[in-house]
Image (cartoon, rainbow, N blue to C red; front, side, top):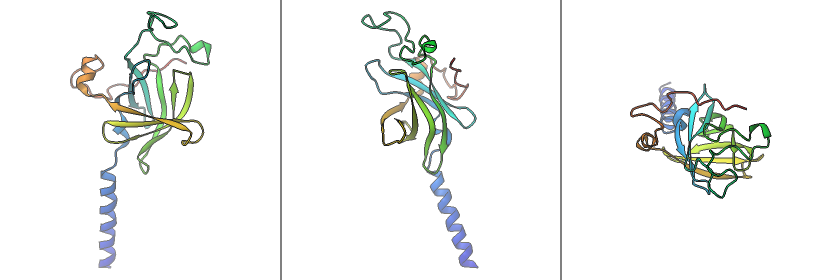
Amino acid sequence: MKKLAITAIVIVFAATTALAGSPGADAVVGYWKTEPDPDGAAIIRIVDNGGRFDGTIVWLEKPIYGPDEERPGKPKVDLDNPDPELRERPLLGLRLLEGFTFDARKEQWKNGTIYDPGNGKTYKCKMWLEGPDTLKVRGFIGFSMLGRNATWTRVPEAELQKLGLVESGEPEQAAEAPATPE
């Protein structure tokens, strides 16, 4: 009996120690900067919408079309969307990530989608943390082996304040992500 009690205590201790080191579902909540590409970087705000995680573009490094682009001097819109009705919606405020759920066992957010405004396509997606300030995002078609990774970095509060995205001391999850008209 004593052996059984000690075994139970060891199992409970091991389980709580293992869970203490893993991120919680809300560890992904916050502001994340994408890798720069020819269109510049973006900042995505990820929020928890009742256990489902969504992300919206809240800042663009280059929010206006350049002089050699389709619409010089105008704010960027979703030009490559396959639905002509959606091609005029602004990229700022566009919901890029949708429907992620957290899998505590795998320590990743999965079952979501990511929209690529560069080609107008939506892909299956999963995400995981590689440290508290590094988010790996993998978009794929069908199987996750057929896809590509991107590395996003958490945006420090001082940079968010400088960009006017938050005020000093504002919690990162103060409000829901704005709805994207579809």
